[in-house]
Image (cartoon, rainbow over the protein chains, first blue to last red):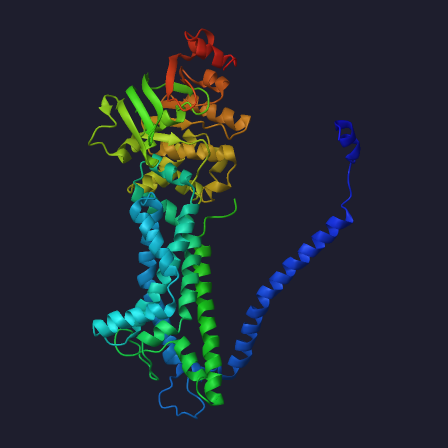
Length: 301
Length: 258
């Protein structure tokens, strides 16, 4: 084709969108909406099921009583002991894994420089991400309880959970720290601010919102874990406020236990337990959002 | 307040790559020294060696001597952090701290080095913002975020931040290249004012700017791709732009380069 022909073939001026393209556009748009719906349907249906079934026993007694002295066929009883257990175990697990995770991420981003140690750490963090939760529970069971001879306790559960939390915290914090522009670090160094203060006062505050989100995701993941709890905190029907001595309970474990019982009152309690777990995670999330919003980089002008 | 810098036989490396070779020069106090030259010839690298910012980059190192009024900045016992307190820097892109207000940005250098009561801090912030010709524009919104200012204002905020720690020398790495002509003029006026107090070194791609603001000019060039950059010529700015002694300088300045 010569240049003239080519030029003649090419339409001039404003073109209208051809029917073919319009159809394709509509088609792909439809696919995107469909994918969105498919992603949302399970979420909505889970929420709907849990709320509609859980509301039956969502009462004051459930929130303030344990299962102590509740017979196999009795109605009533509650999950107070399990709520206390879950909250304490998750907070303890965060108290272990957030500092370690943060420091690891800071090392990887600020000090590692892609050296051998930092590559090794990265590799093991990736491996840890893939560890199934039962294995984390089994590890604490084998090491802490069987080998060291320590008793079952909320603390043992928290340690198992922290093994699961740590890699998530490291990965998300690392991502967030890498997003902080090098310009800001250099600006701080150029003012004669030492490196560690730059990290504390410039890098971490800039990445704060993202780090909080990452930690919350880790908390949410860990709060619903059953297997590691089952193997490490044992089981109890009574209230035990002390995570460091004696068996505790956890909400996932409570749901697991109640759902396995053959009568309707227990099944109801299981649904309400699940609802409570969702609410606790949501509440923690909300608190974290509030903190993040309050500490966010100043907006507006 | 302001000090002289003497550089002798300075080489700078990025890993195995030698970026600049054998640079020697004297930078006079209370004057503006401009570095010009094509991209990649090592002007910015050299500027960053003057306050030990070069070594912040992994694998980067420096050989040679930089004397600040006779003290070797690369001496074995010298703390790089203290060097940077004496020699401030303004970067190509305005980089105010996004989590901080205008006030906190200016106070950052003092506060992060930890001391000073609030009243004294207020005074220094006001003085620095006035010094950077920004006070009148921002005095009613000091608590608003620094990132909300326009590009030119942000750059002046960065200058205020740099002069708040009272350095002896101010290094500026293409401070106007991201700014419009009006903001550029504001910053050039500011430089002329600041040179009474500081030793100023500026890297620029804009030869008119070098001619307008600087007292002395150094022309950097490199022999070819992958070769280290060198100083071709350094002289009074008026002579550099009218009667340079080197052919390469003349070619570059008149736009007949390469």
